[in-house]
Image (cartoon, rainbow, N blue to C red):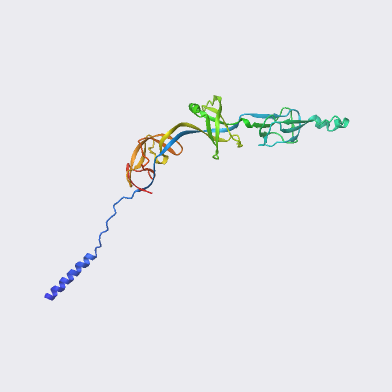
Length: 306
């Protein structure tokens, strides 16, 4: 009996040990919430301007119309469309119809007479040939238009400005013109047209530019007008400033510690292409503001800074 009891106790102890080993330690669950990936920025200080960009179209204000001064045939056309010509340069030669009809009859009768019947037409000014109506050998009537010369010195940009914005011209005597290819030209207000468009209620402003670059007529550029300028501002990138659907309230997400961001309402001032002035509250250069990953976060959010 004692032997059987000892065997029984041994088997019981072995079973208990086996049962304990068959239940591994329960793993500790990671209950920590993963933060939203974000990047951060800080405030910038310095001068800032808010600009208005309006369309301005290149134009030659003065054009010279070259006309035939007799009836006859074009013996020579010495220019081509787009060519720059100087004042006094010969552009056409016309042979009168009488000379064409008589040929060398008069010269044969009197060789000293030297009758040619050729009339030379010269350019009255410098500019670009924008239109050619006839070619060599064509018959033209007296007074017919042969060409149009666009006066180089009359080149300007016409800025169509809404009349309610005209007051900004008082502080924008010098204006930057931005061409579609990225070129920036310095210009100045030369004059204004004495009328407004009856439908659009815009007034044309003549802006002269200082450039030797050949710019085609009809090119639509952007005239940059300074709306307001400040010397000392605190600003943030536009991506950092959030707003509601009606754009009536604005806020940023600011880090309070390494993993927590809170919503801070702000009042904004000037804006330009990439920055927004922050009027209130006051921020320091050490404040960390969410730049990306900030959209759609709750008032207090857990984040992970990249």
